[in-house]
Image (tube, rainbow, N blue to C red; front, side, top):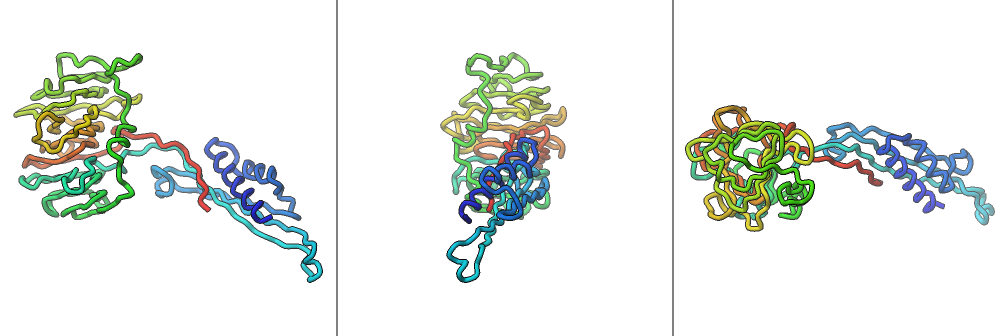
Length: 368
């Protein structure tokens, strides 16, 4: 009877959790399921109690800090005895309990909302390097650093982050004032996990592609543009107005020699929403910024204003240069290796909106 009651409690709690995701009454769904399994809350042979507790948004209990509910079902059964009556036991009572967690759908920033993400899984050639041969100082606002391998700071004064933000690494971390090293549970399977998160290639000729041709200018408005020659934009002021650049080059060296930089806003809706630039994956990722025949890019704002939107370049080396203004770069930077080879101040003011935010489906699970 106790095994049967436990199975019924588990099933009823899950039914209540599912009802919450559908917007129907939790207690009714749980009690209906318990009744179908023989526990109808008749007050004599069994009692069924359904308790619903709130999960606050931002509590960290649900994915993406979503709100939700915890549903607990308690079943108390009273079973008449047969042989035990000779010792005065006319019935036996047992109690079982089950709890489920039901979480709302939400959106969240990839990689825990880190402002800078390095995907290189190496534990020795660090995916994030503040630069050890220059005097660049990094200031990160609104997010920390995530490295899929190791991360290096020249010294404790090279990188400044908001209170509570850290360098979180799968491997070692060196010389940061806040470090969370060896977080192996956060490891990203490279490249499989990254390829899974990338939106479809709009430039491969598939029917329904939304990609627009590169054109001859460096201002892009209201669409997703197929960039087959990124080097052609070197020394240009690249300006986006509600647009996304989808770079198909397998090799480029965008270094803005002496002038040029990024400016503008990303696509606001659809599968490319929040992306300023997406760079197609090269199976031979860039080993270091000065390597040849790979994907390398200097990231810096131009004098015309700010730019926002996630830059996802999973096989590229990204060199973040001094942008002169604290408001210049408002983007999330995701590359294979991220470093700085300049000497000027590097500011990244990351704000989740309008950068990339990924949907998180509603979820239910039996917790006890």
